[in-house]
Image (cartoon, rainbow, N blue to C red):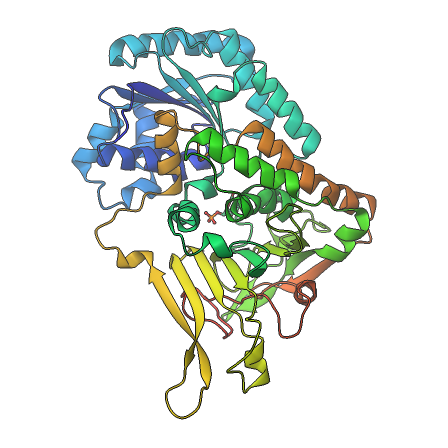
Length: 509
Ligand code: BG6
């Protein structure tokens, strides 16, 4: 195990939802797993006024997301709560940061955290620049006597220009090595396994190119709607919320060249090249190859479900997309001519994220008596969630006379690995940052490169209000038009079920 320095985690946005839902529970898991260093503290920072004790009550003892954990015995919670502190700061005022510095200095004496700090920005993005500047002005970016790291939550920018500006502002107060841009998909164990599947096995890599792969699909479907985040979501939409970050990160891992080493820079260099090779969309490409949709009210499993426009804090005439499907190409040697199809949507029939590799059919159909079998392709499904695992579809002989074939599944499921603890994405990512490992965080240049690909879509939608936003009833797989993106006889999206091995049938949750 890598050594973890003594340190403190300072969370901006300490009274927010992310802190209670993800950050505190993740640190608690690290605490229970023995991953925290000997001297450690969590310092919550926000405008609200709490004493340390009141804050502990809120985020530890009364936190629903903690209380339900098996490990959360009263003794453990009490011991963990002693690591938690609070400081009220008006983060918008640069002068307020000297008070924070004083408190951290005092805590450092008390807890011996060796002047090592992670500053986690879990606030609205409009505060990122101010917080970085406030920290820098009070010397908290200084690494002479300890280290200082900044974790920046998504969304990282609203479009290309704002992402560039954010990078520039952060880099005027911190250096790139101090900045950790989080994308929680990269913390998912199965996402990392994609890298291992490709580069630890000699059987896949020789086939992993335009000579053998017909097309690649990535689906990230959610069953939930926008929940309580209508205000944020209505000015974001699925393209910014899911595609620019999570889905393009998955594409990068599927499409990247083998890195020379497994360190942060080598891996991130290769991912950057994928983003740089994405074929830019013209306005007419956007019309043809990007489908957007919005869910409408419906009855799902006997329950009536609101349409997007009826959700709280959403404009009643909103044209924000809750679904996007798109087709694009990666213009490089490996992927020339191979279409990539990606889609994401809220209020789909089930929650599932998977990458599907469709191999080309064999060149001479010896055994195909049935014409549909002639087109049968081997398919590799990498299931990110739920029912995590890998499935390979291949042809077998049907027992009996002749050579009739049938496609069968060979699968591996993560839950078959008993006794292996699978950490939550945030837990893994926070631990990596604690140890100074940025491999699973996005680098500034690749964030901009991803925006560079997305920006023309946003611009085309803005410029031409007539580009349709198709309605789809909540609980369905999105607008039917998305099926037309995949050209070719008998070819369609894979319609996955929550159980990896069930397919070819219409599934609901
Ligand atoms: C977040 C998006 O980044 O990812 C949410 O803002 C989305 O809208 C979520 O629901 C999905 O994450 P997961 O881990 O549940 O697939």
